[in-house]
Length: 256
Length: 325
Image (cartoon, rainbow over all chains, first blue to last red; front, side, top):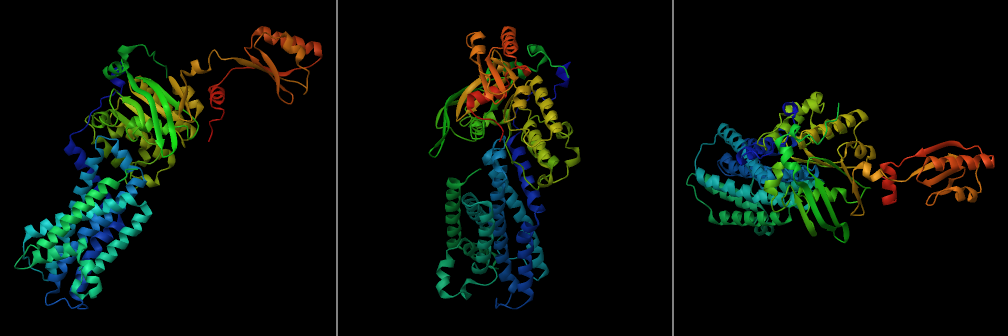
């Protein structure tokens, strides 16, 4: 008789990996979209910058300002999601014991990282769709190489994810919050997002040219040109950042 | 609710019967160091499948380190750990679906809602319990749409317990499951844990509530300074133990005469001014001897009583300290 009532009788087993990872990625996505500050950073700021600097001729950006700005704000959007948002969210997940707790489920640690990456890619798809739509309203017409742009977005995501996880692994949650926002702001100004690196003082230019954001803005701009080019230097530079960032993050990351 | 005799194997689930054949956890010579501090000094322990085992110990005794090594969160410096016959590190992939884990604190997204969180965890397991069942059993109906960060401490505890149960584990680790619960919620949690055992789940819990260990545990493991100091059923730990006789009288009685009348091994002393303790085994003869001596001395002994040992006394004797925080 108890057999029927034995609600808690053990029946252990893991769900298929695909179901585990998609469920976790969906959760990560919902939490990101529920977080107001995060949305400001990932959605509002790139859109506002695109609209403002296209409409207001405060910077000399050449004939077609929207053509110059769109690749820059796409790069910014990638950085804000893969680096800033991910670093902050991961650091707080650790602080709240979520990384530890999920590590004890069949999802596991690799499943968790994979799910986080999928959620980031989904947010980026949303960001880029919105930015392309806004740019189209501002007079931008599609041209360039979509494949080259996609390659840069994916490599940029890998590079910034590695760096974001590295920061989240090294710093406390509050320190990550501050530092990730600071890095975001500095790279936004320096990295050719809304104005060309060539406008920077010569003393800064060499250092800035090695930053991952500079490679991403440069690579995307080349890809978006009507006569699209793949900037090999930028591609190699981003790949190097991705390799270094992921390697460093995987040795320093802490789960609790 | 009537306790079912635990020998009736046929009333349990198949899993319960299979599990009952082997030890759920075998720990041999476990050593864990944090830098220069040694948290566990070669601890050896067996946990019976299908039973409730309570790990008792003062703060810093090594309880959480012990349980987290079994869960696979920490890696030992020496010794072997087998959980359900598996190495928690090298065979983590096989082990994780079979265990349920409730951390001492945290483990939940502050912005997530209870139902959402339970649905998420349910999707990691092949045959999860329906989240609704757990929400009902743990009294979380009012809270299903409230973000975790706005739940009360007790609600968060109950949600963490629900999360540990959702995958229908064979082995459940609960690190201080009732800390911070009000008496009613604690009672409810105890009933649930007893039901889990009836259904064939092995439960390992840490606690610093003596009553919790006495009420729930089939086996109590007392850990102190990273060593196992005692293991047994609550009855074994307190039973066969000497009881003592206490009485009150005017302070400063000369006790030599009384001591002479007591059997060997029974000692009388003035524990505090006016409070006397006769330690050893309190037999009717001892009580008669004490009463007779008091009558001869013209001493009116007040509040004479025989006291048994509690788990708390055993704990105090073994560790030299109380358990309360």
